[in-house]
Amino acid sequence: MQSRNGLSVHRSLPSHHPDGPPRASRVQSVDRSMRLLRAVAEASETDCTAARLAEACDLNRATAWRILSTLEEHGMVSVDRETGRWAVGAAVVEIARSAGIEVVVASAHQALERLCRQTGETAALAVLRSEGLTYVDEVTPTAIVAATWLGQTVPLHATSTGKVLLAFGDRGVTGDLAALRLERHTATTVTDRAHLEAELQVTRDHGFAVCRGEYDSSAWGVSAPVLDRVGRLSAVLSIWGPADRLTDERFDALGALARDTAADILRP
Image 1: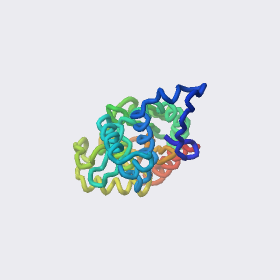
Image 2 (image 1 turned 60 degrees about the vertical axis):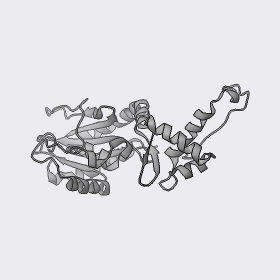
Image 3 (image 1 turned 180 degrees about the vertical axis):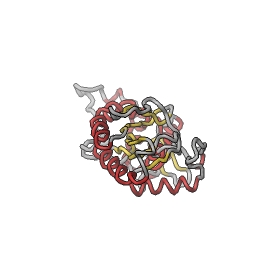
């Protein structure tokens, strides 16, 4: 969607380029759709309206609107009806994650091993899949018997991993917070929406989320976002353990460690 230096690249092949198809074989509607999709992905907050996107792609507004509406039907883009701002949709994120998840997991594994050694607790990585937020890798302390979360999906409001997704993820992917069902799992589960929203703001401010046994009473933890080069959430890194070891007093230090480690995973 962007070149490595962050600049948009769109290059047309000459009519008889030896490395590609003749220009006449290109489908104009697909070409325009791809240009608009790239423009949505690269647009700043003030440049993501249909009018500004049309201008960036040298299209008239009606054409741009029809293409964006079609892309929206396929989940490739989403729009905030109140502001008219367009964003990359869940379908694009799912495709990108499917293609790039192995890169993220491979980049993160050594970091998980290091965190496990440093903290003596389980370090894990979760990604967003169609079935939900799922743990895809973890490293557990060899001297401690720990339950595994590998392959499991978790509720967003009742885990530090899920709170990171709610705090840093795209609304086109996570959905409207107001529609999230706040089911109680343990005595400490946050079921008050205002309380959850306040906690998500603290998560954004500090760069990590915490969980006090809110899904599983025996699992306390901290989580931090793994962001790509343009600041989009790619995965969530977590450190968790039992309440008798992973106490409130350790949250700030472990949260900072998780945040700093997560920030380095996809850094060039």
